[in-house]
View (cartoon, rainbow, N blue to C red):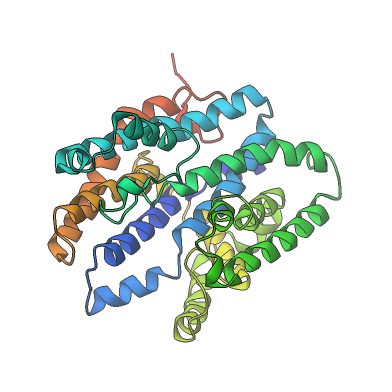
Length: 364
């Protein structure tokens, strides 16, 4: 019963909404366009649903459940690789093709070896690597969205370690241990947020930023909610229309008084956001499947938009609202193509996937 309830969720739709929030934020800010009227209000409202923290919560929720269902390390890591890397290879290859087409590649004077090093870094686990010769292209980074993949890979590695060392699979003390870890990593996150700007250019700070340390509490909250699924389900499932107005009222004061949101939301606000996410995920059964028809393009939307934005920026379309709309529309088209041609086929190779969409049962 619990297994069926768990699977009947709208997380695919939530991930797409979160990805679109990141896209909208990057397009508006990096392309320097200024929406007006109702579009400005919609843009501000989207700040109340910060994409990266939403991704990290959903990741903790689903990845921990996936590992519990199938703790075979070979299959666990194979499934994680199939989720991330085929789309990542395609995205980085597209990025290089656009750079070449723009003419920038020939103008840098960088050697083939330097370009190859950049490519290998982006398709491995060093997505944060960015050489000086990229500084004059687009926003100065090959793809500024890819740093979260470095963090996600660390989460994937930490799940088996955490379960082994802390006895999460059997111990009755799981909740206590998880809550202690969450508090510790909230403090680590706050330390990162409030470090003086004088340290922001230091190498250790940049490495700290792309480590799991400032982000792990968001992931752990997902693990905690998953471990206590039935409690949260009884409290919040089917109650989204009750929770949303309360969150909107709280959001009004968050925006009015500039309470931190973005990638580093106030932890109390983040917990409220988690309740909203969970409630939507388990309200309106079948909504995600009905709207998306089995097409999970959220990952593609997230990783493909910056190569398109950077290409348009280099061609001189900063401040052009029509170019901004084109960037968003073309991102969706490219993400859908990537899903159909690359990601969907790769995910079908998963062994014992949590989401039956990725490996549907075969009927004779």
